[in-house]
Image (cartoon, rainbow, N blue to C red; front, side, top):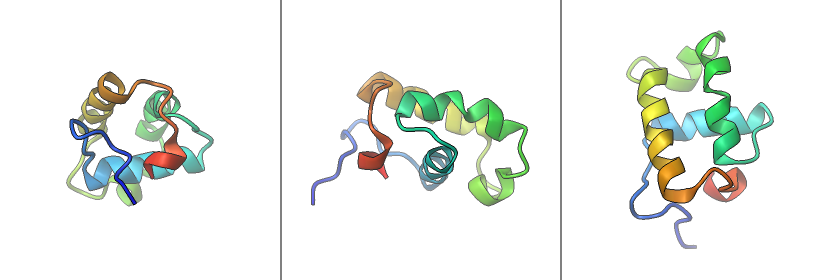
Length: 80
């Protein structure tokens, strides 16, 4: 199976965990996942989603790169 990620966008494990969390919280696209970052930031889920090494700001920057590369309508189910 080919990798659905563009060669220019290879998300870190923290970003992948964030995308899974966003999908579990109703996001269907990369743009919707990005929009949920503010919700993640104030939730109690940060330690289990990001662990101790990543920050929401790091993930935000990474997803912005993905939005520039893949666009906001990229389907999360094909990206996970």
